[in-house]
Amino acid sequence: MLTKIIIGAATVSLFMSGVALAGSSTVNGAAGGAVTGAIVGGPVGAAVGGIAGAAVGAAFDPPPEKVVTYVREAPPPSARVVVKEKVVVGHPLPQTVVVTPIPDNPTYGYAIVNDERVIVEPSSRKVIQVIN
Image (cartoon, rainbow, N blue to C red):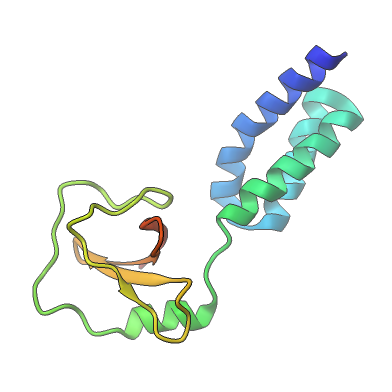
């Protein structure tokens, strides 16, 4: 029984990474985790999946609309910043990219890389959202 729970939890974690990125919210992560967990491990799997999904979903909650608006309207840097790496949500920006803090919300920063505006977690430099 313990083996089934462990295998179910591992499977749920694997499935939840995709669900969390698709939904990008705690609620969607919890719901998707519970459904996947129930399919894999029954009631216990649903409980484990719901908790795991909520945790993964919370890691990718979108920034507040005020932050998104600020980044959309921020003036571009004087010099164009181009990097070879593709800008990917969840991955850190290269150290050569300057991350500018958002004045009203220091939890977030932004950069304009390869002509894309991105919202970044300043401490880890991880991309939280790419603004289209």
